[in-house]
Amino acid sequence: MDRINIHGVKIHNVTMQEAVETVLNWVSGDSIHAVYTPNAEIIMQAQRNPELKNILNEAGLLIPDGAGVILGSKILKTPLKEKVPGIDLVKNLLKASAGKNIGFYILGGKPGVAEMAAVNIMSEFGKVNIRGYAHGYFAPEEENALIENINKQKPDILLVALGVPKQEFWIHQNMYRLNCKVCIGVGGSIDIFAGTATLAPEFMRKAGLEWLFRLIREPRRYKRMMDLPRFILLTLKKRFSRKK
Ligand code: UDP
Image 1 (tube, rainbow, N blue to C red):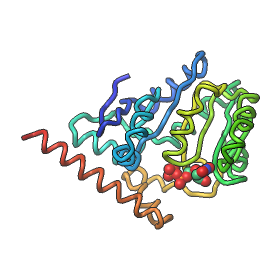
Image 2: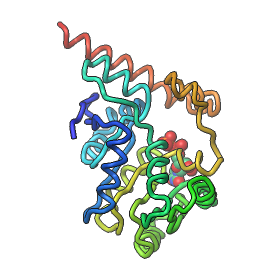
Image 3: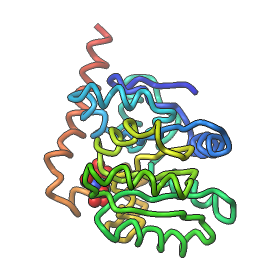
Image 4: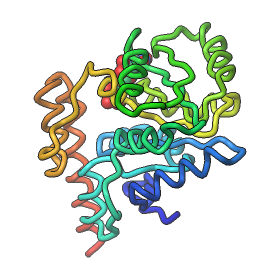
């Protein structure tokens, strides 16, 4: 798969359909793969955290999540094919897995959230095989039991919602002992499935304004969200310093 380097994060140049096919191929394979969903904020976090950058680049699939990444790729004259939001990838995987023997496990969120997400997923997508769930506030000494529980259920796809960068580090550190085929860092998507957070309306998502919706809903995130204009500035700086 072709990769586009955006400030050192090598994003796969895939369409939604290609991303879904890739994950489903891995489900029928033998080894384990990580999928992360970098947006502009995560790319900026990776500038400050080289370990996060390495972990992202070692993933089997890095999808371009968000309008900022697409805009950045265009400014750098290496356009990505399309936006592949993590939540939509998960929804498409759930749709494709309904009625099939593809097992999911949901890890993360506050106590009760993963369970609510599982219930809502089953009512929206029909016969999805959710083999288990657990909240994301476990103590280090509880981790072995948690992994044992996940492995007992033998999920094909493990959805991990511990927030960025915790979920990327957690997947990276535990992949070798997880009995599943694909681990996906899904972050706040779990709250959308659970109904404890709301997805931006379609017209805002189409206009690339999902960040504005989130800022209005969660103004406390404004500091983190300053990474979006920082990302655009860094991208413009790179583009014009290249021209000289
Ligand atoms: N979360 C968790 N354990 C933690 C920290 C966060 O389960 O130790 C959950 C949190 O409850 C939320 C999800 O991770 O459901 C994503 O958090 P947030 O929206 O802050 O992260 P983002 O996806 O924006 O990085």
